[in-house]
Image 1 (cartoon, rainbow, N blue to C red):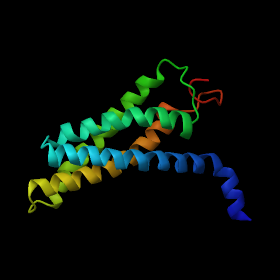
Image 2: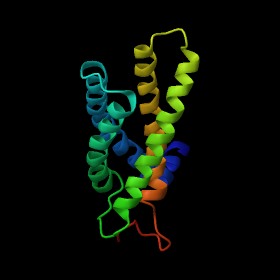
Image 3: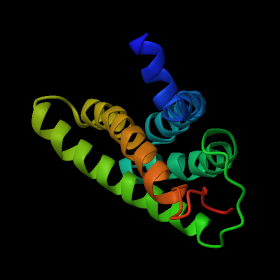
Image 4: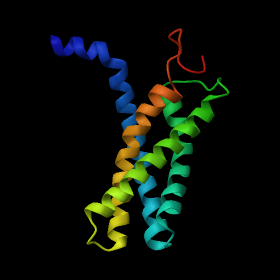
Length: 150
């Protein structure tokens, strides 16, 4: 009985997490293929490879998470700007933390190993930060209990 009551209380949040996860899995797989291809095959550097991948993935994420996850119609002129700010901050923090941390932890490894592991950790950090950034900042609930854009 308690589990059902907890589910009912947090149903909207649970569904947002599930939808965000589905969109995120598709986005992450595509993003990793792009990022690792640019880094390992095209020999672009760490920042350009990951940045290009996140730019492409962010366009997809904006539309899918706005419509499917948070069910927001874009009527708010600031919504796209909040989304861009969120992505830039989350990307900078996630990858800015991941690379030095992995360089420290894997100092004896070749740079290509360090950067590939750092990109994976950066993706994990980005996913967590981005969910809460989109929920609390981009597609936040307004003062009157309406979603952004209503």
